[in-house]
Length: 257
Image (cartoon, rainbow, N blue to C red):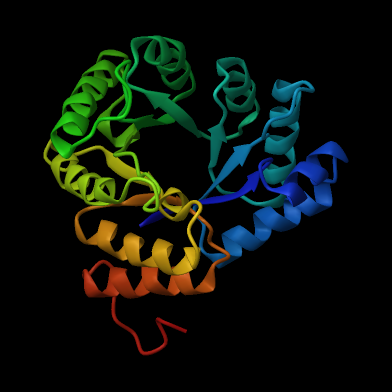
């Protein structure tokens, strides 16, 4: 499974402080530790800064690229910040994220096409979050058509079924699982399927247990990418065990550490 490390995000207090102080060493250390723990891509989010977010994103990209050699995921709700991040990237990146709303697609698909970037697409549209898997699949199909019209092939599309917190929308956890299965049949080859894993445990106690249990369930129905915390050792152990049991990783005595 493709792991996108979530820790370089200005929503975390330590990262916000490093950004304010332009502490490149702290950001670089966090980048290296995530990659060493198993991240294939690093998500970069400036957080709720009001001070030149495009400039901060450019700085983050530069610092992280100097520290590690992995693709980056440019994470911002502002197209100008996404554009700045993509321009600074030395290799094709991933945009995080669009939705199925026409305004969002029109703003971000041209950027993905111009920079050869992948794009994460949340299966939400102007009507809001769908209540069942069928509605999610309907939006996903519309997103797939829009990306293909923009010249973006399915292998650069990452569909997100929308994982909601179990403490607020418990029934939606199984709807997201059903949507993952439905997304696998949209086309051949299918697009990638991604979740923001930590959303499922937001506001709940024992978050790591909830995250790692749900990750195994998602993998079993076809998930191939997740934004998660690679520094959670128990979570990464579950990922390795699930890959082994699903015959995606060769069994070895020392596989699970």
